[in-house]
Image (cartoon, rainbow, N blue to C red):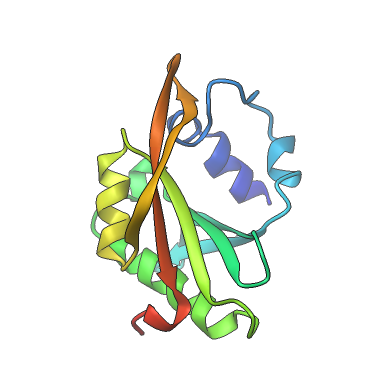
Length: 147
């Protein structure tokens, strides 16, 4: 959990993933009630993933890749995570969802590049820098994950 907290509490990552109302405190990671995965590239920690069941059939997924690790291996990390989910998911899990604030075009491109599809908008649903903004809703069926 130390590495998870290191990634989430990083100033740049925190600014990207937290809303204006969330107090920056490492204990928030312990209270999220999710499964955490640690990602590696060439045996070096390169990011983390949170998975949280929102129903028996659906899990919310969020991939957190520190700024220094974004770029060349980002897509490989994403595919590796999805393959891990496909190989290890309980039989009742059929779909992954995620929501990305519209201001993060790079993350939206990343989600598309690993197979997620737009499913609509969660309008004015997150406060960032004093402004309510939309989030793009994405989904990917487990059966659609390319191995």
